[in-house]
Image (cartoon, rainbow, N blue to C red; front, side):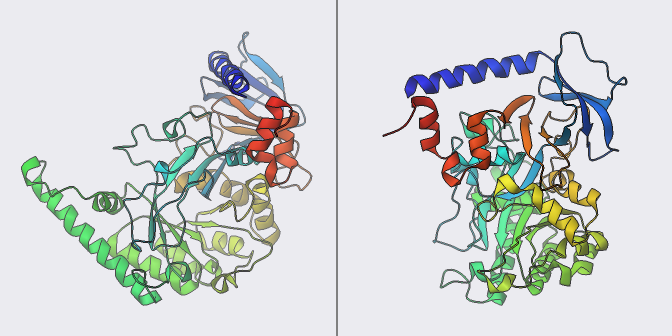
Length: 433
């Protein structure tokens, strides 16, 4: 098996170098750039992991040395952004406290997790890897690009995990975090505990500000406070699990009181308070579940969340919460939103640029524009059609999924064992004992 792994890595490294050096042109497709009009008979030109040009055939000059792929009859769509995922086998805070902002999910992610394969099979190229929602604050999320990785640094958008902001902050309210001490026993106590911690963070920030860069006057380092100062300064976005309308309003009150930026995650009853969410200027990342159940506070989760939020003027995106829903079927979330009354344009934005904005990554991903990362998918047809397949997924100019490859097709169409280790062993050794 070791020889197989080394061979696979060698091929991957060689292909990566070639993909970066030569321009690649995809011509003849219908291109949906998202932030501009759909292009018929278009050309997408990429090189060195970036988009060089996108436009109509005849308007984009294809270099003589370009690798040209005929995409006639296909649809080229931006790489999909999943704003709430649990892929990567990571685990966050433990049972010692209800609020643990110092915990980083990036310290627990397995970059070799087979689960990332199913995300690629679903066209997902960027995701927000989250700790769980069983705490009021379960730790720092990680914004990941699903590219070849030997260490977590290879997947992170940030350059320095020790000093940079590499993701958001996961918070939750409602029933998930209501447990015996040291957790809160009621919704009111949940909010009180959060307020107390943020007040402590404000005091810590005030000490830093008053020190004015003088190291001798700086307060003693506290990792939990440092993370919350980043939240207070707007550098780290809060991704807040919430369901019931009264819990949603509690989040909005806390965000207003302490001035932090927040994305509402799930928001099952957003349709009941869409006006209030819009007035607060807060975006929502929603989940489309066709068989609700398991949680009383989500009993009023309805598909009309999508059109209700759009009509209120709320920036709205979608997420998988994988493994709650399957990344391989993520595109159907937009289709279900349209079925419920959402506009086609906003539904497609909800899979791409809306999520990128929520993660502060809109300058790199979420649409097809020159200068952005060359993350895109090639579809067999309309992205909202039940008959459409994701044929290829490209990340920074590298083909990471190809349905015409039997092993990749197995991942796209198989059961849950299709993207687990035994399949890799089967491919390499002809079967595992």
